[in-house]
Length: 155
Image 1 (cartoon, rainbow, N blue to C red):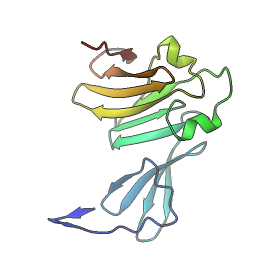
Image 2: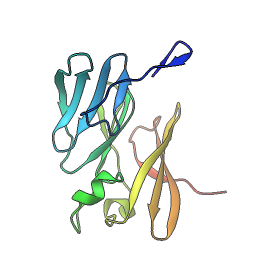
Image 3: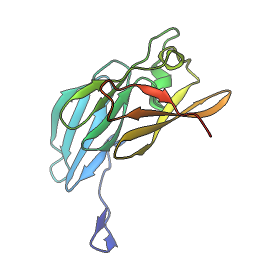
């Protein structure tokens, strides 16, 4: 981590840090098929904050008030997918979970397809979708009444 104008090492050995969020001496992390935890790095004490929203999902913890959980993330979720499963995506805004409406092509995504968060802005979350045919971008408009993942048309 950065302290002042220098880099300081943080001992995260033995911890599952995929998509973790470090704040001070606390690592917030996600355990698939279990839930969200805060880990005190000085004592290694874990406190469970909430259950996972769905089975076989993974998470991208972007900010304390922007956590995205889905069965569509790479590299974790393809390993746990079953053929024909219906995918889902949820976003935590710091206070509430939002069920994000997915387009049909992502609800029914194959094992070889995945999404990754590319950016968080003041009004949206931008995702990259990748499959055998290439890459496209999707967006959640955070100002919309109902959150949905919508294709971003290239210009």
